[in-house]
Length: 326
Image (cartoon, rainbow, N blue to C red; front, side):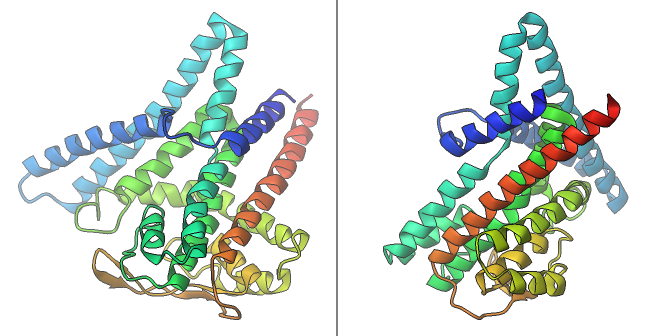
């Protein structure tokens, strides 16, 4: 009962306050630790003449293991210490970290910037705003491509920034959810398939695929349910999900993207430029309607609908398991 109440409080705080720019976020500390340890691993690998792929992969595995384990122990140890100093202060810290782990409001705020720029027909500002959300080149994107990129980000990050953190908060509280954020940060910093991280980032990328496997599907299924509740095209969302949920290099990203594409009756995915080079990706969904700024708002509704449904579902499962244990 206590954990459900604390998580519910954290969700409310996130929906109200989001992530203020002036507030230091634990992910920033995780990112600094990754940067420092990454440089150490790269320097070690450089000292080895004729370095083999296996050694760099092993160094990447050590990097991922140290960051994730270190994050878990730091979060657990901090809470343990604070709770022993004063239980009330411990609860405040726990709720505060839960609130920081969730990112629904942050995702809404950042995607709203793109929405406003498109609504004002300021395509140059829209390109800049969406560049903070996606890895692709945005300098030459059309209005529709900008809207699609933003919708894809909201759909994909419904898993990474909302449902997966919520899932791990229920499973193991703040320490496990913080460890998940460490995995997510590792993937965003070293999980690229480029010359620098092709082997050093393999472990981080694979670990991210593993920890998101269940949450991505839970996010997609709850988003499907939200389609019907929000009176969107649930039938097309289901059809698109079945057809295109595997249409991505990652085993997880297309799960929610496929649902969003069907629900909004648009086509996502396709070929985009990354660092000046075209990267071919399968398309997701059908172009029944043009993707404009209004679809960004619809994607946000799907995100919040998925959050509400998952919170209810996870709470029921948590109560059920607690009852069985007792």
